[in-house]
Image 1 (cartoon, rainbow over the protein chains, first blue to last red):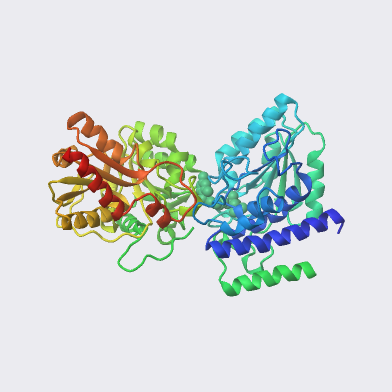
Image 2: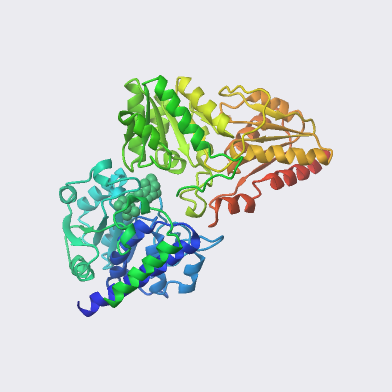
Length: 276
Length: 318
Ligand SMILES: Cc1ncc(C[n+]2csc(CCOP(=O)(O)OP(=O)(O)O)c2C)c(N)n1
Ligand SMILES: [Mg+2]
């Protein structure tokens, strides 16, 4: 593994252990979707995105929009790791008056671009950010991470159609394609396939990638950063609960809290991964 | 998030809701349920197993869910559209207005885990604006039941009612209220306690706190009447006239302090019989905190109602 990829791997491993600790401490959380998104978010925050955490509102910053806002374990560990706020704040997750709400809030947490939680909001906002950049001929890039179940929301396709129409080349959507939504598989609920064809039909370029392979993610994101005339959709094939054997591909871990024994096992598995 | 099991003597009203919908469905094959990936959070797993064809899961798509509900009603069904009340009311507001209310579609909108049931998940997931928004819509019945019995009665009444109804289904543990007259009618409030010094008008999860507050006021020599105003729209004006006759009204609800039940009561009183009021509810977007922490922090409990009543009686005395 190259140096960039191995750095992402170790940051993602830290995020996984840290977010599980937060969930256990808080007594609730969304570990399934946190763990499927961790590698994607790690690659963005610890390699790809250009930002200054000391100046989180700098106009020229690259933007990351967390459309699947329920996965704050992954987002907050990345923001803390990237220096937007002290790592110790992670211990306040979900506690009374904490800045670390169950869903991200830009009015009191630096690094958050827009408040999400209701699915189907992040992409339209990201499209607006990209249109502003287009008008200003700014060179910042806009990345947005969506759930796959989230793509059942009509607002996502209204935004996708408009982004295609405007040729928003600085916009990249990453679909966390873990194939599960809250209660069941996406394909058993309201099927998304053929997903790549849908995005293409809406005027997007499409790439598919293993969403848990840091090197592959970095390659895809590097491509995303080159000049483009169309928006790009990266379908990241992932597993809900990735990295913790008993959570992997289990809809039941969409939300939930590991008990003491499960937590110990999860941490042991993640530690073993770093030694391996 | 799944709620913890209710302590003994306390109930999650979703159980009464699904029990009743299942009974109705067994007797009437027009009854269908419509959900947005919310089978679990609506506790409709058993319904799905019993009536697989009559559970329509549109996926994560609330606008579509309500539109589909209106279409099902057009096709002769009686749809119980069932999703987290925050998304059902906010995301699908225009579908509720145009497809259900304005079109007079026979849709039953069940807002699950209303109020601040989602605690730490924050303002996006709190459904504290729903009553204010929805009572502004003409020809939409809005019901906020207080306990399991009333939830079941409201569901039965909604099924029998011709027209759109929004019913808030709370998962916050509440006791079964003591009542002498167990009849439920849409638009008819129930007086749980007589009293002459002040009236407490509450609904939903605040009703049992209102009863406790009235008991404590009695110990202070204050005669407080308690009204359970389950139907917010259309509101029971005859009952409000009697409440206003005490000369002081405290309202209490698990929702915004403005625009909801308190707002409805204030509108009536201001135009018919002005009385000093206190309106208890939440001020707006809330800080991070659990359901219980939020209720206590904003005085939505017996202590808060008790204190507001005392405070208001000072104004009344002037
Ligand atoms: C508008 C809206 N409807 C419903 C929900 C409840 N909800 C939270 S997460 C979730 C499932 C999301 O599935 P997916 O987008 O695939 O996310 P992931 O698998 O990455 O967790 C649902 C239905 C919500 N947050 N917003
Ligand atoms: Mg998913």
